[in-house]
Amino acid sequence: MLTTSKRASIALAFVSAASTLGAGIAPAQAITLMDIIRGGPGKRPPVADNGLPGVVSRERRVEQDVDPQPLPKVSGPKYHTYRVDPTRGVKTAGFVAATATGIERYLVAAKVSGPSDIAAALENFYGKNAKPLWVSDGEINDRARGVLELFQRADDYGLDPADYRVEEPELVTASVQNVSLGAETEADVALDSHAGALMQFELALSAKALMFAQDMVRGRLDPNRISGYHDFKRKEVKLSFVLPFIKLDESAAGYLEGLAPRSKQFLALKSELQTLRTEETQQGDPIALSSNLLLKPGKSSPELASVVAAIRRNGSDALKESHSATFASYQKGSDYTPEIVDLVKAFQEEVGLKSDGVVGPATVRAMVGDTQEAKINKLVVAMEQARWLPAELGDRHVFINQPAYTAYYHENGVEQFSMRTVVGSKANQTYFFQDELETVEFNPYWGVPQSIIINEMLPKLRADPSYLDRMGYEVAVNGRAVPSSSVNWYGSTQSISVRQPPSSDNALGELKILFPNEHAIYMHDTPSKSFFKRDMRALSHGCVRLAEPRKMAAAVLGVTEEDIAKRISQGKNLGEKITAKIPVYVAYFTAWPNKDGVVEYFDDVYDRDAATLKALKATSAARAT
Image 1 (cartoon, one colour):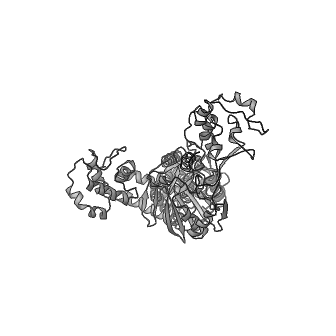
Image 2: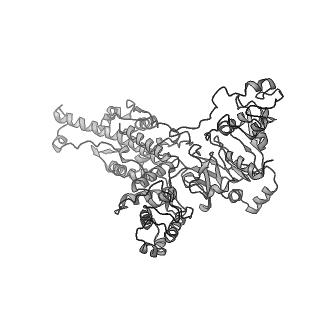
Image 3: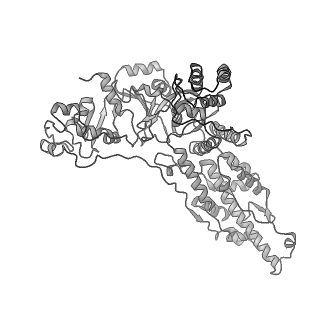
C-alpha cells in the first residue's frame, strides 16, 4: 500500500492547472510495478465490456496492447509575426473644400493614407468643415507648431516620434507672395504649388494627430496579434471627437497631451523613462559575470572580484556602510570567505532573493543589472502594455505580475499586501489578460485538463491502465464513472474526464480562487510549498499558485483568515461567491513600480518583451512607408 508521502510525490507530477501546453512525455512502453507483477508489459487481466463508448471490451484489449501510432500531443498558443493595421487612401472628393474658393479647395488634391478608422474620421470631418485647422493666412499656424513640437517629444510617453513626422511645406518668397493673382504666370504656378503643399500638410497633420490620439489612449499595438497568450479587447477611441475638439481648442497640443494615461503606475514609468534618458552620468564600464556562474560558500572563483565590484556598484548606501570593513579589507582574492558570503547574503536579501550566499544565475542578474538601453526598452514595453489595461486599475483589485512572481492585493487604492507566486513554465505559459474574481472554492476537486491527460498521463495509462485507479483519481466517460483500467486509452480522450478528489494530496491544495475564463486559469493553493523558496518560479502548468492562499481568500471575501480556516476544516467541497466587484489583472510587466513608486525591473521569462519590441518595430516601419 502506498504511503501518503509517496502518493503526494506522484500526484505532484501533475500539480497546477491549466495552460494548453504540456511537458515532456514519458516513454509509451515504460515498465511499471504492476507490469512486473503481471509478468511483463501488456499482461493485463481481461475487462468486461459495459457498453460505454471509449471503454474497452475483452476482445478488443489484446489488439490495443501495441501502440499503432505515435502518442498524441496537445500544442498551445503560438507567437505571431505581427500584422500591422491595413491602410487605405482618404477619399477627398466629398470634402466641403471642393466647393470653397480659397486655399481650402486644394484639399481635394491631397494624398494621404491611413488605417480605415483614421481615414473615415478624416472624411467625416473635412466633409463638414472647409476651414483648415493647421493653416492660417497662407502659412502654418501656431496650433500646428505646438502639435509638431509635441510629436518631437513623443518618446516621453513611450512612443516613437518618427511615427508622427509630417513634412512641412517650404515658405514662398516675398516676391512670389506679392504677385497679382491675375494672369497665369510662373508666380501663379508657385502660389498654386504652395497652396497645394499647405493643404497636403493640413490633411497629413490631421491624420497624424488622430494616430497620436489613438496611440496615447490604447497603444500602438493590437496585443492579440502578438501571441495567442495575449487576450485583450482592444480599446475603442472615438476618433470622430478628436478633430472637432482641436477645432474648438487653440491649445491642440495640450488637448492631445491630456489624452495620456494618468494612473500613478503610468506616471511612475514615464518619470523613470525621462530620468534614464536625461541622466548625464552613465553606468560606467559594465561588470562582466558569467551567466552560468555557481559559487558556493567555502569555494573559490576567479570571478569573485567582479562579484564584490558589482555589489559595490549596485548595493544600497546602507549595505555598503554596514559592510565597509569587508570592502576595505578585500584584496581581490578568489577565496569565497565568510565575510564576503555575509556581504552576498545581505545583497540577496536587499534585492528580494533567497539569502543563502550561493551566487547563481538569479544573483548574477541582480548584481550585473540591466544596461541603460535594456531598462529603456522595458519601460517602453511597459508603457505600451499599461495602455491595454483600464485607465485606473480600481481601488480594490488583485494584480499578478508574472515576471515578478508576485501577487498584490489593493484596497482603498493602496497595496495591502503581496505574496510570492508560482506561474506557468516557459512551455506552459500563463496568459496575459484581465478578468473579475467570482468564487472561492474550499477543498476543491482538481479537474485534470485535456492537455495534461494527453501530454503527461496518457503515456503512463497506455503502459498501465489502472494507474489512475491506484492513485485515487476519478474517471468518467461521457459523464459516467468507470475504472481507469476499463478505458480505451488508445482512442480519443475528448469524452473522458479525470479529476482528483479533495485531499491532502490534491494538486490544488486547500482552496482555489476562480475568475472563469476560457484559458482555465485561476489562483490556488499547492502542496508543493518548497517551490516558493526558489528565485525563478516559472514552474506550473499555467495557473497561479499562491504562497499564502488563505490570506488572499480572506481579503477577497472580506473575512478573517480564521474564518477561512474553519471552512477548510469542514473537509467539504464548497464554493463561496465573492460579492464585491474585484478585478484581477494577470499581467506581464518586466518594469513596474512598487508600492513606493520606485520602478523595479524583472527578467523577461517568456521573451514577451522581445516579441512586443519586434511588433513595435514592424509598426513603425509600416508607418514610415
